[in-house]
Length: 176
Image (tube, rainbow, N blue to C red):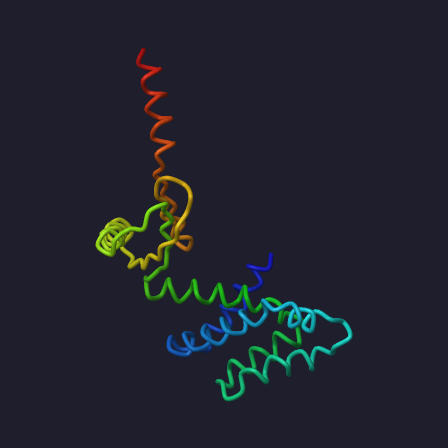
């Protein structure tokens, strides 16, 4: 539900902003989202003892000197008691920017670190199949194999030794 509400706000913000402004707004909203991971900040924004105006002023103090459209946007969020949706709005805005630029971010999870050349080959292969530029980052895992995930494109590919072994055993038993 929150994602749907966030998308409406992102659509409204996108209507009044250029691509460059949206990128700036994204940076600011991502910074605010990081701030909202702090429990004391969340407590302040959700407290019924603090007025909506004070909550809005608290966020606006952090973005002084920003674009007036963004400041007005934060004021509207505050008036509608939607300041806690800022992380969802930032995520939706990031997704929209990725769609516009056709550049996405993904994660490669493997037990062994891939070389830069292998990572680049994987990125090129994904670009060939999707038509989108995909920047992959690497994380380590205990699972033997490799997993590639590009969440915003809905791509998830797994290659694990255990799965190949199970399929091979299954194939051999069916063949007999």
